[in-house]
Image: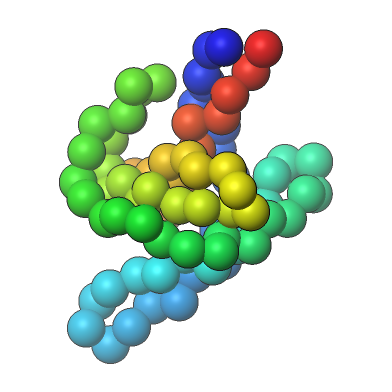
Length: 81
């Protein structure tokens, strides 16, 4: 199974202390996925290229990494194959 960088739209809450909590991911095809839980937050490089703030998230029973590139763009490490 291969992974690819897929840019997504993200709905997030921004707090007065500057922190951010992503709530929902929207794919280009219009599919929406509510983030059930944020498992970990750290600054990291992605295995598919790119870097930023990594949110290890759970959607249903699946876990994946969501990255905030800190330039207004977000991406996930999507699994293909």
